Amino acid sequence: MKTVGVFDSGVGGLSVLRALLAESPGVRFIYVADSAYAPYGERTVSEITDRSERITAWLRQTHRIDALVVACNTATALAIDSLRDTHPDLPIVGVEPALKPAAAMSHTRHIGVLATRGTLNSERFARLRTQLERTASSPVHFICQPCDGLADAIERDDLQTQQALCKRYAAALREHAPGDMDTVVLGCTHYPFAADLLAQFLGPDVTLVDTGMAVARRTRDVLGTSIENDSAAAPPRLLSTGDPTALSRAASRWLGIQAHAEKLAV
Ligand code: DGL
Image 1 (cartoon, rainbow, N blue to C red):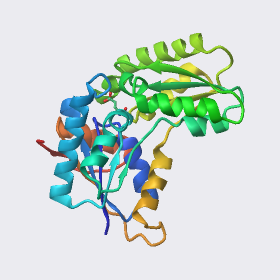
Image 2 (cartoon, rainbow, N blue to C red; image 1 turned 30 degrees about the vertical axis):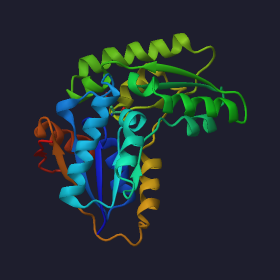
Image 3 (cartoon, rainbow, N blue to C red; image 1 turned 120 degrees about the vertical axis):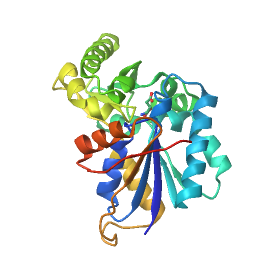
Image 4 (cartoon, rainbow, N blue to C red; image 1 turned 90 degrees about the vertical axis):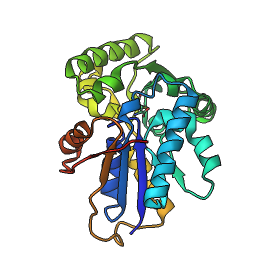
């Protein structure tokens, strides 16, 4: 059985784990929520690189993982190059805001992007955006909105703050969009868990796009496994550097997994 390590700044990467479990039921996933250091969105590059290196080293030492999924847009944007340099023998799959799928599906060509400040300010994101603006079949406009505090509110399960922030950021996107916006990219793995609120404030004409399934398919390709050949479902192991009960609760509510999350000190 193949083993894959997955990590995020906290509970957000569970949105990616949900897709991974659906796509590769016979793979054993070890999920690390770095909740003691969340949110990553407003941290420095060296802090995020250090956390990503420590978690990856722990996953390799303890589980001999066959691949790593960086289930965090911010860590992908700021630390994946360094991880690939340090671990050239380990297949590493990252998560990037779904600009390309959004550009392929948008009719109005005005696309909102919600992500952390770290992701939106990164060189990696700038490259992705410029490349698509240059190569899309017809001109496309991205309206980028940093969502300070939203991942943190999801992390803390604070519904009132989530509601206020989703309302604020949806209004900001609308205000800055030069025309009708029909597509919004959820560029942080925490945001799918606030999708209902965002949909409510953005209105019925807007389609929300995230990358969970694309990442899961890419991971299956990297592992060389197939859904048909997979053995029986393996329960994921869940670990948190913060409060493990918060991770267990989130996994139960969002993924229907009844797992006892463990405390991890790295
Ligand atoms: N879930 C992460 C992302 O996809 C990070 C959110 C945060 O910790 O700020 O960007």
